[in-house]
Amino acid sequence: MLWAVRRLDPGTLHQHIDPMYRAAWALTGSREDAEDLVQDTFMQVLSRPRMIRGDAPEGAGERAYLMQALRNTFYTRMRTASRRPRTTTMPEELTPADPRAPAPQRVAEVNEILDAVSELPEDFRLALAAIDILGLSYREAATALDVPEATITTRLYRARRRIAERFADPSAPSREGSGAGGVIPGG
Image 1 (tube, one colour):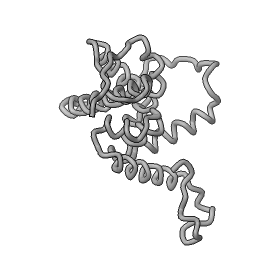
Image 2 (cartoon, one colour):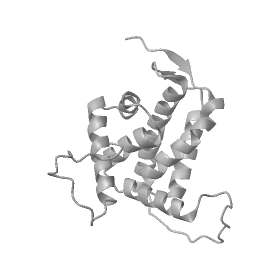
Image 3 (cartoon, one colour):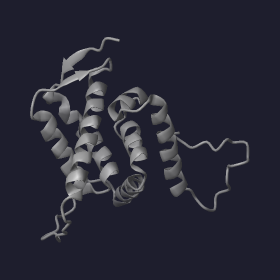
Image 4 (cartoon, helix red, strand yellow):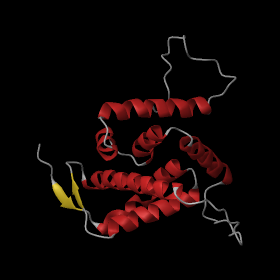
């Protein structure tokens, strides 16, 4: 199979910042670490010209490439951090809330969901971040994460199921055994 090869256009990377940030937050479990991870990833990608191969449309191919770079940067940071002692510093001053920011309830819900995602096993987090947060196709996610497409499908199903179970209403009747097949919204 012949792959089309094209140069990554640095001028279009700004359109991927938000999805990359959400994926990084899901991986790290921390807003601050996610910001650092995305910054490090873009710094690494922009350090020299990059070639993207594949037959995906331009934006999707870039996003798959960036997911792979994000994952690799995440692993590198984890290895580096495991060799260093951890210290914690307190913030010197608090910044005022942004008036354009979403409602506090919505922010709290998103934070709770991203916290739940960050507690998933790493393979599940990566699959969920690639598909549901970055919006990659199953094929692009499989390529970016270097696993078969069927593995992505299984990991995504299991990750979604765990998230759904975590947020399930305990007073709601169980759908198991009711013939509904345990359908999970979005799954």
